[in-house]
Image (tube, one colour):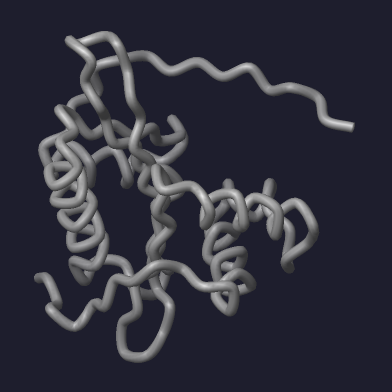
Length: 155
């Protein structure tokens, strides 16, 4: 069941602390996220906010921040110069899942990608999130590629 009451808007400075809580609201996130904003979060937030090819949005439901995602628009030469949209860090608060809010966020992202002339929408999901995989496949996404990451040490 979807709810028309989800309000999607650009994230604002005042949302940062709540976003960090949302990122840490599962077994994987609690291992890799801080508990409050620090210089690294602030710097990343400013970079995203100042780049027109990135849109960090939040979903508000019943006057609460319950969802977020980062939508990035990536130019490419492959696929005949195709632009693609990349969805990152999509989260719905644990106590708000199952209400159709994630689908609303996903539909909004796909619509934004179409408006920007993208030829595809892509995302990654950690292998340890089978519920998310089922959600994305029900929404029409196909597990078409293997993903690889190389984590770099930071000083």
